[in-house]
Amino acid sequence: MVQSEIHHIALNVSDVKEAKEFYSRFFSLHEIQKPSDRPNSGAWLEATDGRQIHLRKGKVPEDNGQHLAFLVTDIHKTCQILLTAEVHVTSPVAIGTSLQAFLHDPAGNRIEIHQLGGSNADA
Image (cartoon, rainbow, N blue to C red; front, side, top):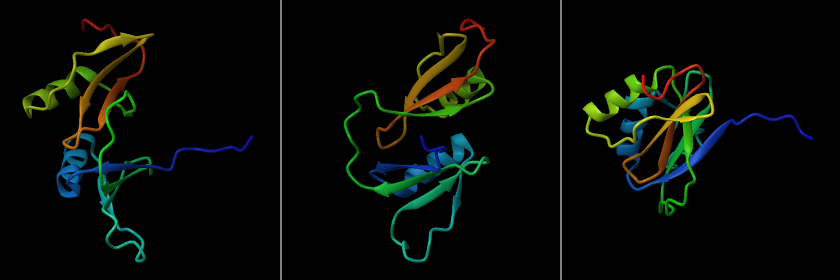
């Protein structure tokens, strides 16, 4: 078995600028420079841990449950920030000892926000 970690995920979006602003605003991703041989390939965003999301203009696949998940420290605060910005997000629900909620980016890609253990879904 090969030892590996996730480096990046590529997402198709209908509007790269809109998606870039969304992920930067709500998930603290920042744009990084793309390689010089990829100047027109959308936008590359990076999280504080170095993992990346590459945004590509393209047809967004139908939502069949596939999603990416962001780990947050306070899911209730995150949901409130999203709701205040008029982004529809589900109420947090327990999954094991953790909490999860779901939303969609402006292009329709499903996103999970996830808070690890020790929390009460009614908090």
